[in-house]
Image 1 (cartoon, rainbow, N blue to C red):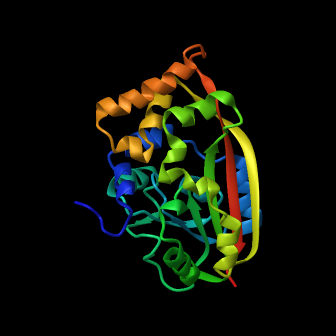
Image 2 (image 1 turned 90 degrees about the vertical axis):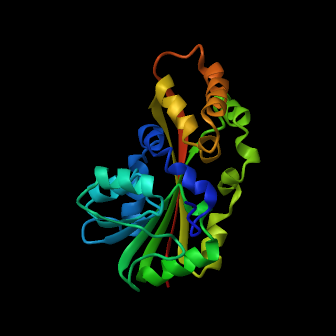
Length: 250
């Protein structure tokens, strides 16, 4: 059944949750250091990980000592998150209707998801649940297209022609400033995710618009990318740039 609360394309992450959990990258230590220093994520902080997915960032917030509540609307993703982190609160909710009380958290984190939100409504809700002076952090792992084979990967899966890729051209600093947040800043870090061909296939299938296709079409996309790595060793690095934007509520 379609969930009218969310973008229909995000529902593809339910059936693709296992591929997402297995192959999507985590976040590098440098990004978590930014959350500690700029967003106050750490012991004593109550943090809402919004649109938490399978908990790629959530588990790092817990490891940082924060008191974390995860909010995720897609049942398949939420089920995996609950398996990974059974000791934390995992709530069904959306960015436009966060199931938390006013001024109840010290920080809100959004990893790899803000582009799916209705920006004005989501920012109003985030402001509502944040305590005065609380922080918002937006994270994105971005495949590093300065590396030629990665640029070709994005070309052969038609990445830049798809709406999901538009987050890469969104001015997140301006978005936060226009929403009334202060102290807006940005940090980025470069790192590599180790891959095998099996993980690469799962990574490709976890892309929303590919996950929405029948298995034979998904396999076509996989084979296009496999052709780019046919001379690579069994294990090889996928280069990423992780971006973190942070700001404080007035």
